[in-house]
Image 1 (tube, rainbow, N blue to C red):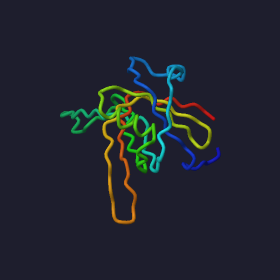
Image 2 (image 1 turned 180 degrees about the vertical axis):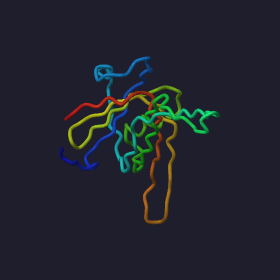
Image 3 (image 1 turned 90 degrees about the horizontal axis):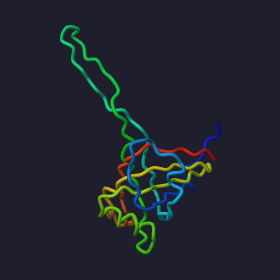
Image 4 (image 1 turned 120 degrees about the vertical axis):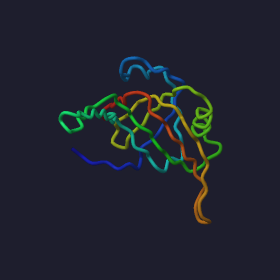
Length: 150
């Protein structure tokens, strides 16, 4: 298996896409028009983590642990602010709604990832004198992540 750099990967936002009771598949994203979000400088983590169920059993003197529901996580991304970028404009607009949006990640390997999520924040962040202004955006992933091989 070849390794590949994060550099060259791209993040896109689509339109509103409602959640559903079953896992998404690639075809569920076919009708979406995706716009690249330019200035992406830090790619956040994404992927399922199981909730922990802990039951304390008195007679055993031990906690028994089980896996519960799955949570695809919170993707925390950073962008160099480009005020006229259509993707950043769409991301900021999505942060002001309560809707799930379609997202696509194109990896530098040629693989793709699709999911829906809530844009929870789109905050401007400064820094010291020799830094640029950044846009910090948190996406709460609200579905499985569809993986498409290169």
